[in-house]
Length: 379
Image (cartoon, rainbow, N blue to C red; front, side, top):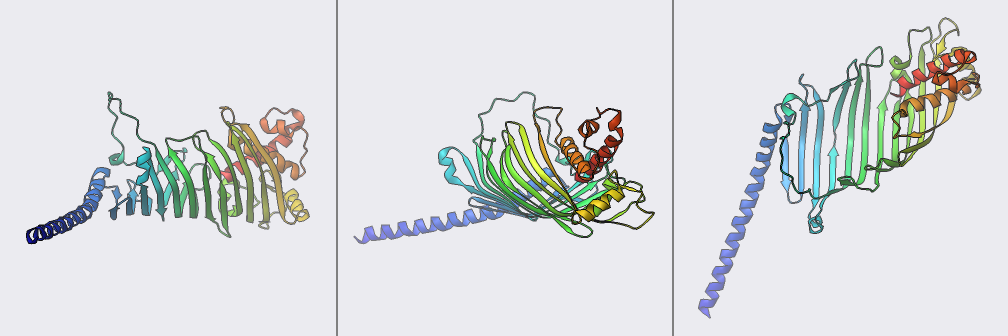
């Protein structure tokens, strides 16, 4: 009995020692794996990429201080913290399940040159992927991945446009909060719900953007609502104010739109409201604002509580290469606004599309000017 007791005691000591050794080894492995992964990423992705820290834990990876710079050493992508949590129970169903992907304090700098090309962000030469091999063995299809939740917190975007306006315009989008649920890769025939909010900084106000709904990424079907409140249009004057004696000193824009897409067919009723417009006193009321005589605009504002509301319905086949959502939206708003401002309705649609007769030329000119101004503003 004494011998048996000693054997049990020795076995327990050996097991305890093995547990301690194994636990210590795992701890050291995790500790140095973090450093190894961090160093390997920076080595492979080049000098343009840097990362402060990577923490590898059971079912959880967190990276912080992610920065990507362009060739001029300017930060074009920055992420405060990127966290990914996995659900290993999905492996029992032969499926990878990511419980959540959380991105905190991300920043993106987007720059368009005078030709309309994206010059930032672009992958520096040391980040561009290598050419694929010509002959590659057929591999087994990868297991599908389901991301239960994607969340962006306190995001920021700087958009510098050097193409459309006479003077480059920098649009600052801040406080981006975004949540999307149930995203499958490869994309499945399922809806993913989302909620989005953000702000757009202006000279005299901060515009508020909100949107929510659901999107079927695979088929492009969607059912969503979006609204914009108090967008300061004076911050975007280079888009629509050409050399003119009329100078707008104050003005805001509201937008509401309800978008439905089924089988590539779009139906989107909406409302645009121009409000609280004020103009710098100058050489009288003979000028034009967005292609319309200023006196007509001021008169309408006085009659309608300092607002110009315009209703529109956007419809079309997204599968038709001749259908352009932006052009169609501007056409609908232009016609509606011209009618609201008291321009003749007869022949107006034909004038916008350029097929009107002699009697619509003058109306067509004004409507087209409205359309061009709105197009640049909404861009």
